[in-house]
Image (tube, rainbow, N blue to C red; front, side):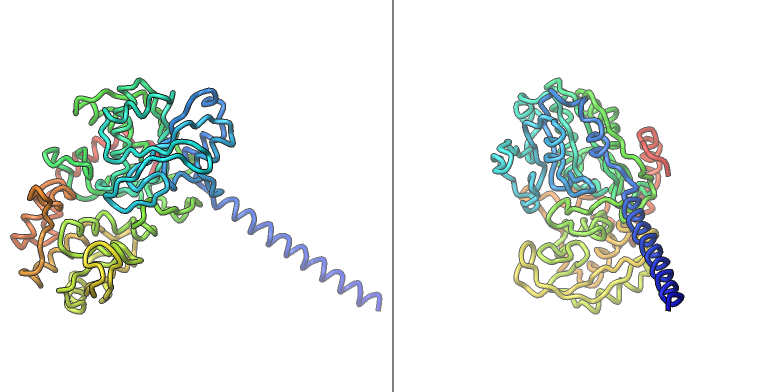
Amino acid sequence: MKRWLGMVLAFVLIFSLIGTHSADGKQEQKKGKGSVKTGLEILLENPDRYKGKRVGLIANPTAMTTGYDHALDAMLEKGIQVTHVYGPEHGVRGTEQAGDVPGSYEDPRTGLPFVNLYGKQPQEMVALFAEVDVLIFDIQDVGSRFYTYIYTMAYAMEAAALADKPFIVLDRPNPIGGDKVEGPVLDPAYRSFVGLFPIPQRHGMTVGELAYLFNEEFLPQSGAQSVDLQVIQMKGWKRGSHYQDTGLPWVLPSPNMPTLETALVYPGTGMIEGTNLSEGRGTTRPFELVGAPYIKGWELTEALNQQNLPGVSFREAYFNPTFSKYQGENVGGVQLHIEDPKTFDPILTGLTIMQETKRLYPKEFQWRQDADSSYWIDKLTGSERVRTEIDRGTFARKIVEQWEAELNQFKKLRQQYLLYSP
């Protein structure tokens, strides 16, 4: 009996040790998962440098630690005196839809002023920055030229230079990677708030790298002063990193950017905004669903799958947007399914969708025009080239070849400002 009890106790001890080891292993794995430290977390490790200074924080909901603390709360807890919080498009809280101008108000929790920067020129921002000593920018970008947060950063940098305030960028990953540079480079003649500077549609840079590029190259070229700039770099991020491997939480950068897949398709299907196709706004899969009431889903699906585009397949899909284009109407079209993010080419894909839609429905397909009769697609793509070539019937793969030289030229310029290894 004693021998039997001894064997039972031995087994219990062995299994308890295995269980403990397994639990510890999981815990270690969980701790190790956070392989990337953002600029925010590096700053929080050494907050004394900013104590005693009135800090203006430019942020939205993406300014988050791995522990899901917002930068504002984390800074205040560390004794950093944040006195004003400034928001980009969609607002500090990220509640406004695209193009809506968020208001300024007093935060009910902290009592701090939440101030809107969207729609304001640098000269207007100078007065808004009068009561701070230093400006800190912490917003997650999505890697596409026509996403406006990088231009809020550029305008704020210009305003900070005019106000003689230092500007600090807390760097974050490019969620669609920093190893690919794709798409046309913007022609300065088509400069707008969805494309201020001559960078490609998929730039492959972090906000910190872009800040250095803007400060050294593009702000002086536009007649603006360079700002006293510091970028607090990440630790552990590499250019080819997948965002899923960083250990960082994905927080919606804007209301229609719910997932990483959205960010990955956006440099391509974001162009759909320049047509009378729905880009899926008003659905749970914006920029992954594309269609219009005049489209027969099976026709477009078959045509697109026959193109054998890398890393993506198309499924016949129907949807009824709750807002934006074709609100309340039944829409036929496709859903993009990314099968290989490494080979997927979002811009070639977006061009092919427009190419095939115009071929199948030449009378119904139209380019979106603004009140001044300009074409929105030209602003998104940075010239009239995409529109005119698709109208001529040029295949998407041939269009892509046309910007190879300008893309290579940008890559050489970009190389000087890269902060992270492959």
